[in-house]
Length: 263
Image (tube, rainbow, N blue to C red; front, side, top):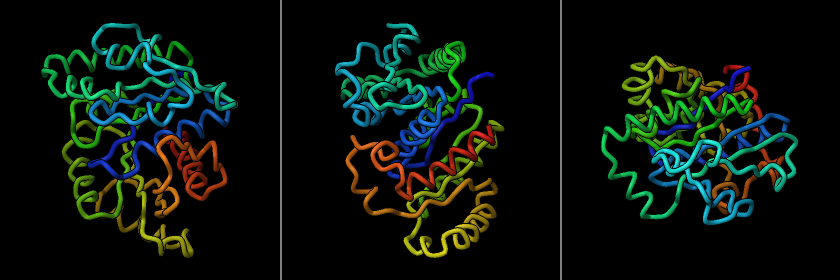
């Protein structure tokens, strides 16, 4: 079976995209799958902090180094499965969070971006050869070259949005101008929904999902309420490990099940 690739995307920052990517990867790995998690948000990488307790800084080979042909695909991965006592495997490939590295990416030419997408496809091929079940990519918000590269190389994209009018408009524009143009498979996840959706959540969420599907003209895979304690959680806390029974994680378990069937 070939690797199923899933990109996590959003129109703007602040939707909870990276938290969702991290916890989805852990959920899938903890149910016995072999998972690769890539931080392709080169302009604002956050996964190095999320996994700071399980990795050694500085990392010997960042994803940036691979795209710059300074190391091999295999060298970017750190296996954190043992650290977290996961039932399966979790391999993480991290973007360099140093300011110089972020600045370097922003100054890259378009010709470099063309080469980068070829490198990314070769990375996915290597991941497939490593018999990885799922590859999850946390991408840059908006229509950056790195995001487009991740989308093009993925089997399915999960767009994370809130109910904020700017988020919804940005999501609608991306779906029309990017995803429809590329003819890519996509699902939309509404995160940080208003607190009243917690009451009779299935009924209310269903109505909300139906309404949004008519607006966005794409399927809504789920609606997750806004949990204040999740918003206040430190970046180094992985809820799927520390609070697996939290409603937020239980919501994501359902999303993971739907995604794995969809892909």
